[in-house]
Each structure stands twice: as C-alpha cells, then as structure tokens.
Image (cartoon, rainbow, N blue to C red):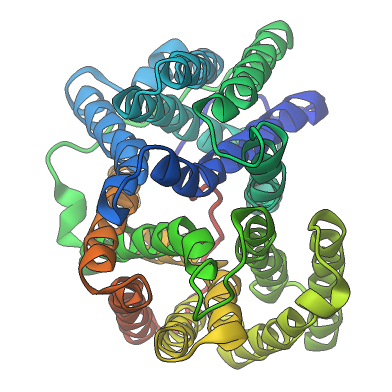
Amino acid sequence: MENELNLEKPKYTVPFVTLTTLFFMWGFITCMNDVLIPHLKELFQLSYLQSMLVQFCFFGAYFIGSVVYFVTSHFSGDPINKIGYKNGMLLGLLIASIGCFLFYPAALYASYPLFLSALFILGLGFTLLQIAANPYISLLGTPDGASSRLNLAQAFNSLGTTIAPIIGGYLIFEFFAVDGKITAAATEIPYIIFTGIFLLLGLLLYKIKLPEFKTTETLAKGLGALQFPQLKLGILAIFFYVGAEVCIGSFIINFLALPDIMGIPESVSKNYLALYWGGAMIGRFVGSISLSQGLSQAKKITYMLLAALAVFALIFALVDLSFSQIMVFLVFIAVNLIFFFIGKSVPARTLYLFGLANVVLILITIFSSGSLAMWTILSVGLFNSIMWSNIFTLSIHGLGKYTSQGSSLLVMAILGGALLPLVQGGLADAYGLQHSFFVPVFGYLYIAFFGLYCAKKLGNVNVESTAGGH
C-alpha cells in the first residue's frame, strides 16, 4: 500500500499508548464472554447450545460488519479512507460503549435476548475498531518497525484476555453475587464501568492530535484475490482457528466443573481460564523472538527462555493460585519451546507443528480425566499463540494489488467464532461436554494441513507477523 506519509520523525508515543489501550480493552471484553457464558447458562437455565448464542451474536457481528464494509468499499470506496482513521476509531468506540450500556437494561429485565442484542452491537463496534486501528498502528512510525509495533499491541491484547477471567470472574461470581447465588445484576455495574472506560478512551482519542494518513491505493475490482490457492485455503484456516480457540475458551469453566475432571466452582476455574489465554500471550512473545531474523541462534534461545519465564511470572502474580497449583504448566511451556526450535523460525512449518500438537493435546483431554485432562486443554493456548499471525500472513503472501481484498476476506472468516461453538454446544447437549471437544480437533487438523500445504507451496519463505486476531 502506498501512503502519503510525512517521513519526518513526529512524536508518536501518546497515539501509540492510546491505541495499545484499545487493543487491551477489546481483548479484555472479548474474553469476558467466556465468563458470561457459564453465568448466563445458570441464570437462564440454558442448554449448552443456547449458551453458545453469546459467541454466535458477538462473532457473527464481526462477519456481518466486515461484509457490509467490504461491499461498501467495493462500490463506494474505502469508508475509513474517507472519514479518516481517527473518526473510524471514535465511531467504533461509541458503538462499543452503546453495546456495553445495553447490558444494564438486559440485566434489569433479566432478558437473554437483550443480552444477545447488546453483544451483537458490541461486536459491531469492535469490528470497526479492528478495521481502523490495526492498519493505523502500523503507520505510526517507520515501515521497518511496523511488525514490532503490531506485535507489541497484540501482546497488550493478550494481556487483556489473560486478566479478564480473573477480574471479570471475581466481579460476576463473587463480588456482585448475592449470598453466593448468581443474579442478573452481577453484570450491571461491570458493564456500566466498561461503558465509561470506552467513553473516556473516546474523549482522550478526540482530544489528542493524531497524524492523518491517506492511501492512494485503488481497490481491486471483482474477487481476483480468490485466484490464489493459499488465500482460499487460508480463509478456511482462519475460520477453524478462531472457531476452535473460542470453542475451548467458552467451555473451560464448565469443563473444569465436571466431577470427572476437577469438580471446582466458577470462582476457582476462572483462574485456570486465565492460564489458557495467558499461554497465548507467552507464545506470542516467544514467537515474535523465534520468527525474528536479526538474532543469532544463541541469543534467540536465551531471549525466548527469558520471555517465557517473565510472562509466566506475570501470570502467576495475577492469578489467585499457588505455585504448586500451576507448576505443571511449566512442563507444557517447555514443550512449546521445543516445538518452536523444531520449527526453525519457518512460519509454515511452525504452524503445521503447532496444529498437530493441539490435536494431540485435545485428544488426550477427551480420553483422559482429572488433572491430566485439565492441563492438556489449558495448554492448547500456548500453541494457539502464533496461529492467527502465521495463517494471515501466509494467506496474503504474494497477493500484490489484491492484498487488501484478501485481508478483508480473511477478517470475514472470524465467522468461525460464531458457528463452531454452536456446533460444539449441540454436541455437548447430545453426547456430553468432554466428547464435544472433537469439534476443535477437526479444526486443528485442518490448520495442520494448511501449514503443510504452505510449507510445500511457499517453501521456507519468512513473512512478517500481523497483529489483530480476536
């Protein structure tokens, strides 16, 4: 993309900090869905399938919003390029704040349809934020530093998904519970607070001066991007990745409550859910080092070990668990590092290996019980870490003028986060929660296939990491 940029060295610190706060908040709110699901399931006496409408409405909004944006761009030009990145983000924040505020009447009237409507509107706001903030943050500085800025912003997104189960779970399951019982009001104050945060971020964004960027790129007509086989296969890979990741996060709290697994209450299992999302944060920091090309092998190994231990220490400081309760996680972190070394910094090969690793981990979860089943399902997060960025960049590699079009088609594939949890919910109702995890197994099998295909098709090509994800 050619941009009319001012190549002087303006101060980008304040805009960058503001935008990374956005990444943190949408990671936090997105992961709050995993806490909401068991809360709403118990409150409204829902089946697993019915409770998965939470993810269906939230991630379905991503799909619908992306389709509307794509069609508008095709016929009338890129809306963000017309109104500006700043106005696009302000509009996204306003819509997201409205979605959060609607949790108040939903809780007041104890209406599940109102909760779902609020989630859909919140998802639409996040869609616009993703479309505007992801490319904008890559423009805040020199082109050669874009990847590191995007990775740093994505790390803050992961921090949000890690602490959301701890803070959100405490507020909903403990602080606002009445005599230990779940109430609709448990969501009122937390989401009113989130409404205020989004409005404050919008005010801050409005007040600060952001550099303006305009693109001279003309969008390609038709669907020429689909002539590239890696993109067509990559769309399905994003679909299965987001779907599988959301499936597991959505069911972990209920899964750990099963008598044959751990039999622990939501107030405890929310901390283990933080390990699942925290594993992705560990893997993203380690992966950014592993896939960097400017370091010697010795420095890579040293930095990867230090990064893994540092992030693990941060997670340990956040969760309400003793070291003896989470020390087993260190074993799986070590396995994750070994797989990074076997991948030899080649994105396609690393993706293939991580896909297979998750297949094995989930199969062990399905056919075992107790703490082994718990640790294998939690450790899937470690191997999810690099999947979004590797799938995305492998898919758009070599697309040239069709890159923007290909990117928008990949964002639409977030629809997997809406549909696959519904499928797993239906299977959980029919065959039991543990056996329903075959749904993400098939998702990761496809991701492994895509990684293998790209390894053969693209060879050892190295591609830049892309931030975002859900």
